[in-house]
Image (tube, rainbow, N blue to C red):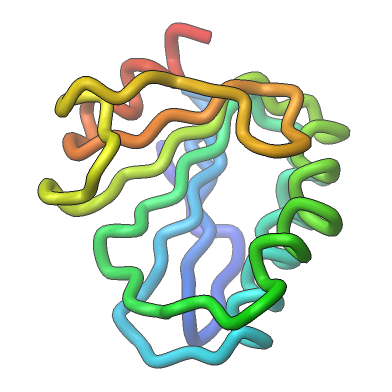
Length: 134
């Protein structure tokens, strides 16, 4: 049974223990780069505690546009923490018209400094099935 384990104004973190998935569900609220960073840091902290085999980010309600340097910060400060937590797969659930989804012919890939594959999905079920197959 899924359990909400943390939240802030911008996101909810849900643990799916039966599937060893830790999910971050972005909420449809305005945020700054600092709010984005705080939420990812919270997610990484929970991943370090729980040590799930898979991470899922539901970005279907995500509306923030990143400022300069935010993705580099993510690569430097967050992605290594996911790897250290033992993550084996990382999936994004995104809106149906998002480019590069598995459903539109995209492929899983190692993203930046990650040591695990990441894939983008338009259908949540496909993301969960892929994560569970790890």
